[in-house]
Length: 304
Image: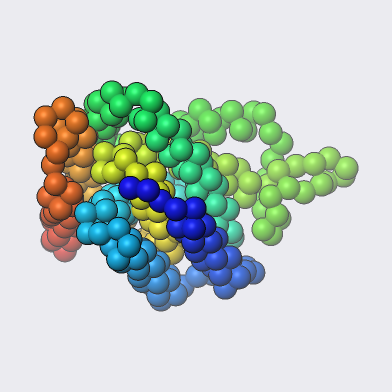
């Protein structure tokens, strides 16, 4: 698939415009309500579907299904990311009115990091296609690891990166509004809000190491890889405020995600070693697994 420069400009312009709009509408220290988060989550999903529709119109159904597969996978994996955000905000006692600012800059950083990783991944696959087998094996390993660790909890104090930041940087003990850095008695300090931002960026980098190979298992077209990632990431802030308090109800999410990772890892290897698995079949498997995990979680939560 040959993607024109105009298509890239249109995609990047749309992403930038939506980020600016989101920042403008949520400026200030206001807290984001559940209703507002639900409305914005619907808007972001609509944007994701609209982009898929445009891709379908210009490039056909198969390419569009590749985009939708990547989009659904990224949204699914993002729920795990949202859960970690909630734990970080809770552990560091971040006021709700400051959380949107952290997430906004966190998402911007995530877009830049993933864009760079996608370019490197695409170049690597182009030069050495056998690396796809390594990606596939890595996803299968990640799936098994995720399943085995499904009952474990994230503890901030166990993070070596967190401990390194605490040792190397000077932080204030209190928040100073939305500031990331302040000067007290002539000495410059970082605020706890900056510490949270660094942890959010670091955790997204960790998740990206898993999610980028997943997308390349669905499609090797850099434009589709970035589009599915970007549109899934854009809605993460609203998703957080929508489901952060409901995470404990998704009791079978880890199992579902591990099955999805196992499937796409196997698909990546099989598609390049034996025969190509149709995109529609792959998307169907992903949707079915995710639906079963959600329905089973809701039923179990209703019984408890």
